[in-house]
Length: 152
Image (cartoon, rainbow, N blue to C red; front, side, top):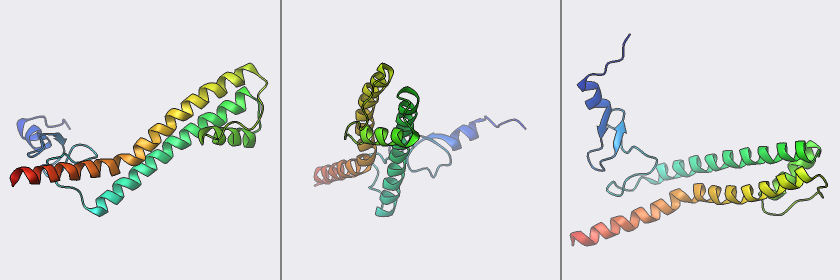
């Protein structure tokens, strides 16, 4: 059965949000096209804010788990450590504490150096993911306060 691509389909499913001007995909009841609301839209309820925080925390946890998996595999196959020792070293580097075992193989030293830099970037990214909803809510309230002062 072919997909309908007539004007009604485009008008009902691919449209601009009336207040924010964002492009929405879906029924006309869409609130916003992104994860965060536009500054012209009201602040979301505390229930939706908590849900947004949980989603961001889950995403951050996934990023940490992938980074930890990369570290475990790297230590296991470059330094020939046991799985448990690989987990220990990867977790210590990822948390910023430093390596536990002394590395003798040059490939393992190169991996440890690259993984340490990668871990620093992961830390910054995870903090950004976790703090994004809080910072967005604070800035959104400042924009609402600014708009209220303009109407006085």
